[in-house]
Image (tube, rainbow, N blue to C red; front, side, top):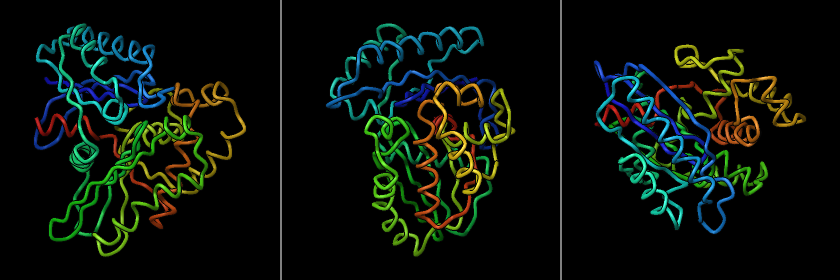
Length: 292
């Protein structure tokens, strides 16, 4: 049994499982909302956000011991840490408290891991396809096409960043458009299928399914349509974060900033002229274990 951890801008994820037949058999998933990227001005992480993150990792250490996992987890840090001027402060605190080392990965590395994880549970297709990983601070676009083509790109657009920078729908659309033509040119057209991974896509899917406790097997493969996303945004936009959380408990603390996530999802569908995402619960953490 092995473990992998992803330190993101909004959440810290733990996955425990075993690799069998090219797939990860999941034994345990745990998520902690730490908002590491919250209030990050001039690319400096706040001390309180760093403490929340260190505390979450210390909790994960106890969880792993309780489940008999003795091998140190594979840990990666994404946009919040790779952009921060004081990232070394956090990484040193993590090592001092847990003894764990964290690898800060590039957007391209993040994209490749997400693609490997997402497609491990879905049949590969000859037609051009794209995996989209919406995080807290960045969104990764990973494409595959005929003749083994592979393209991985990352843009500074995520659910925490939208809230923090108060990005309008038009600004979100502009950032997505910046990558659209490059992808279309590389693939010789727009992708025929888009797979969505990451907490925004999976939590929204769980909310639409009406489940109160997250279950990978229910969310994986869910068809997240433009119509459903539009209706959910209309329903949630007038509500406070607390009212959204009460109505859809599965959203948790993400309820505060979920409108930005819905806007990102909707603008991706619009830009790539697609009516729906296929949701994959497998992502960067699965990719980490598969590549280990």
